[in-house]
Amino acid sequence: MKIINVETYLFRSSRNYLLVKIETDDGIVGWGDATLNGREMVVQILVDNYLKDLLVGTDASKINEIWQMIYVGTYWRGGPIMMTALAGVDMALWDIKGKYAEMPLVDLIGGRFREKVEVYSHVHGRNADELVESVKRKKAEGFQNLRYSFDSRDHHSDMIFTQPHQDIVQGHFEKSSIESLADFWDSRVYAQDLIRITDRLRKEFGMTLGLIHDVHGRLSLSAAKEVCRELEKMHLMFIEDPIDSKKTNGLEEIRNTSTTPIGIGELFNSIDECRALISKHHIDYLRIDISHFGGITPSLRAAALSDVFDVKMAFHGPSDISPVAHAACYHIDSSISNFGIQEYVDFEQEVKDVFKMPYTYDNGFVTINNTPGLGVEIDENQLMECDEYMKSYLPILRDMMSAIHNW
Ligand code: KDG
Ligand code: MG
Image (cartoon, rainbow, N blue to C red; front, side, top):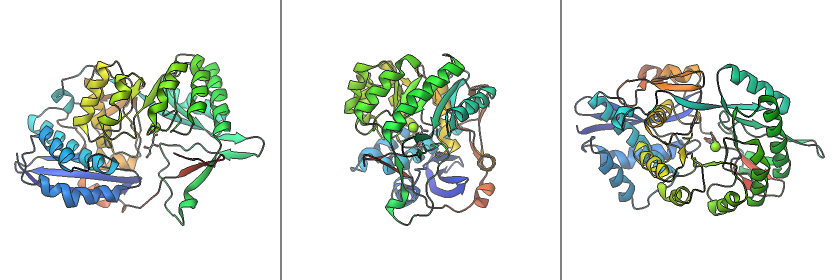
């Protein structure tokens, strides 16, 4: 089962995606997702100019060995660019293995632990009333778990701080300067609004609705401690990234002062970045992104390590990684014992025209079918019809106290 070709496809189908396609000499084709929102071209260069040379001629069945050879062998290991490229390759190799074995990934990695995977969707409102209406609509679609976001208004200055809709904002396409990317933000106004709006949601919908809020690393440690303490009685499923997830030394303090569950992980690129958080149980949910963590191989290790320390998995599932990555998550979610929840996106029709999904959503749950491999069929004719890649930049938030935050 020798690799005879590695190709990348960078295109735009409602937003940008980068796919890796690997072909073997026995005619099997595997697909992986290597999309890194805002830096796609760099990942493509890495796959095309460095990884392809290493892969062609290698036995595609040796996934663990190939993974380590690339990861360790690069010497300058890790980081989002490298780990996204490696993820694209890794997913394609698992896809090949499943197709060769005529088994879906879920069976290759231990079989079904559950038939259907519980998911959460996103709701946004410009204010509390609008948010309540959005929740009602999503509940009517069957969702029992929702991540909520809202805009904040400073009543003194009348400034509105838009909390970005992280699922749909792709970034700024036109850029005149780095300053043009920055939106203003006031963490104090936001923190107060978060407490008030969460309380309103609980009053409207009771305690059984699963509520998740993504702070996106925008709070200082002391503000995050206060917010987590205040939210304790509102029983969130979890608060995501309450502080900058690259500076997690403060998490212990949050843990010691509140019982609000914490989910972190979308910015992690390797197990080295989360080993201590898991083993010290500073987080309740590990939210790694399969496309930025090096793919299926290391995600299975992270899930197993989390299981040992009683941390649950809640894979990152935004629309800026393709359905190939989402399918890989659903396979893993279906097979592991420490599954927590999965972030769900209903892709636009134009995306569904390119990617034939192996999974279906019904009443708050997703079921992955038995198509071999990852199970996503790529319609290459449709892919060729897609728009060209369009460079974009993620926004920046500039706090009134002049700190720069994640958007
Ligand atoms: O590209 C950035 C998005 O993937 C991220 O902002 C989405 O935070 C996110 C989430 O939890 O889905
Ligand atoms: Mg997030």
